[in-house]
Image (tube, rainbow, N blue to C red; front, side):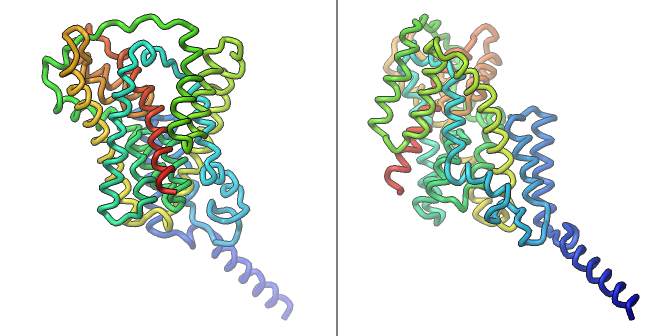
Length: 386
């Protein structure tokens, strides 16, 4: 009897162990999401598409889709688990402002300061945000959800996470993955639109070299820029404040160590955490929904609309500028916030038509303006949707 009891106990133990394995709990959704995670990692390594983002997100997708028996407090949606605690930085909006601090500390606003009208291009490119917002409303999303989805058009992952965590926490994973995916696809999405909207003559426009910007101008800009934007859109304070504070650390000349920390170790740590947890939040049962497909489609549309808006605005602006002062419309795409990738796209497309026409420095003006513009747009949406 005693030996039978032992065998029965061992059988029960093995049965219970089996119930806790990933094999026993796996579903088609888990396998599909793991494959998607592997594709992200492949694109990051093989194609070098935003590897600093896609590697953490891709591996996070794999981590979040290992099937497990619920109740072990290990899943990202289980209160008190390690992943859940780390994910609070996304849900509570802690990570995005810290990312903006690092972005500010590594951004040179000289191109924008030397040619302030480029700021208008960054503003025009935010058309993608409000265009996607309107389409999302037509598809049946609530106003708050539509606003969170629309911000994908700003081509700014941290801003998308910050706004969606406030307006539509249930959609954070889909919105964040969509935003970062399309940021990586900027070199694929934007060139066809740019070529479609411009003539050969427009692509060959040469712009005047930007004027030299003094160090005092660089020091004054973050203070004045912050005051102007924060007074207009105080709801964007966490992002705008950290962006301009980081830039002041860089340009002040007396806080070099702080600036190096913000644009180096700090932003690297936050990028790892935000990528891994956003990826892990795409659990199959939460992520594989029709709404996620809509979000990805709207994300692509918002990028296209934003590129349309930036390029067409430059063409409109050129109607009022004299010859010699005209702007090459190919830098209009750089009004989205994907720094510096969209500026590189402007330069690369321009080089296809004239290998001596260097547009990178000019494109950096609307590109950094797009960073400010996306934060302001997020503040606007947050202001009337909360």
